[in-house]
Image (cartoon, rainbow, N blue to C red; front, side):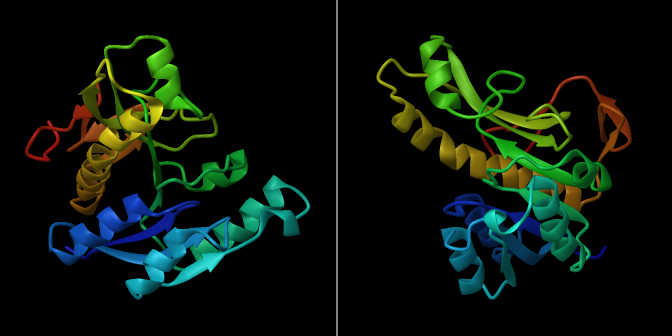
Length: 219
């Protein structure tokens, strides 16, 4: 089976990208990262990619007439590397509906909450404000609605009485990394697909997201 060809979109520090690169280099993930693209030319994720000899590309949103024009340009560049999968790993821009539609079922996002709870920003602070018992992260298919695509897999952690938003984010981050690596592994094994609003694993519809186990597997 050929390696899964992946393009990664990132706006920030690139820690999820680092997790994918490390898993690839250790032989745990049969992927080829063809491109890392960003809306922020100074994003650390681009430096991470260059250090790993991965092609990079960045465009400034302010150079375009509107969001749709920016998205068409950026995703046109992404399309040229012919990815099997686009991974949004800390990509902080909404994507135009027509662009999303062109990649439906072939683009995923990692989000720091147990979706459908807390779409959007400030997820850790919102969970603490609600006195939630647990928090987590989700990997979902990207659709035109914000953080509303079918959820493939999740990881859960308990919220501690001493947690602040920063402390909770820091505790969750390594679990996010494992979740993303495990989920991309499903794609690399050609085991996951989307049919309408349904996630298919090995051709069977899932009623609930997969859960990350302590050993890093999805069950």
